[in-house]
Image 1 (cartoon, rainbow, N blue to C red):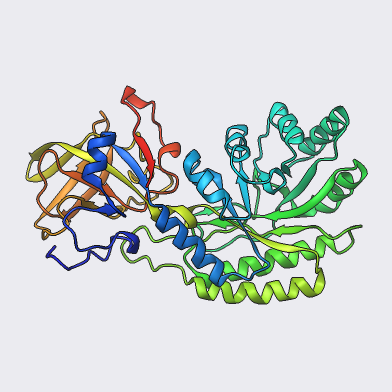
Image 2: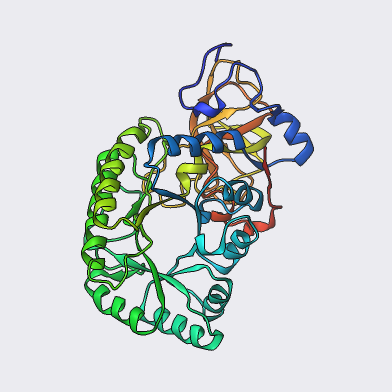
Length: 410
């Protein structure tokens, strides 16, 4: 790639004219010398810019929550805690990180279909909002409330009777381990009331990783209608209706970035409707990948270069054990390549088609298959973009005993 040209597959936060990829005043080669390779790096400026874009387009009354599961790195969670309105966690470990941040406990929501009794006890004690997803969870929270002499904040997560088209993962519609079927919701709401629990909100999460604004708008519309239908007979208006997120980011050639302005326009209409119907209730949009996904990179060093029956292989010191999603083994049906670059040769033109393979003894350990890149040699740095979400903690780091990568928020 000639100087001044940009690879359209490199996300906008990292477009530059320099030879070596930079994070603000830091270059990836300097970070590699300081941290060793492989490593993950997350750009705070890119995260800040994404949050500000959301604030510009979403209605002022809408609260923005960060789903910690997307990236639970403590420094990153701490950074976001002062920039969003809430944190969503899905385990006691994530709850500990959220509670260690500046976030108010009541603004931390605890989701998940498999909460242990000990986790529920800790959640009641801490004062975080507990998302209820089964009758047993209701009974366990009620028992802990009596034991501790507290009135827990809870929300009821619904499994809606519709499914979102075009989502990377369906989280609602049909049989699901998540939430309670909407048909059961009236009975469960009565039980929550009878047990003396404080119903703070309703939670509906229908799907994830969607790039189509019209589909997201339809899901939000149907989620709000469903929540309002269930709650209009409650003794008090809920504080919030969490309509999930599902905002996707482009990973592959041909992916078109989500039209955030259109999503925001539809949300303004929904917010006005909710304000008229229930002035004390606000919408919550819960996002993880969309906030941090494009702000992170995975950097790994070429440790061997070989040719097998005409195919060039770059063997790297990192692989699927650190970045399962980039290998295609985290839900892809047909494997596609994440955007990659030779991060210390950005000013050179692509001249050869290569496969980037990690150090593991399995043919699944491929970070990029037959991609067209500048010629790379041993010691060069491969950069995998779109790596800020579902990277390290979604990977089998113990596989074959290789050391874990470092992480840094730059």
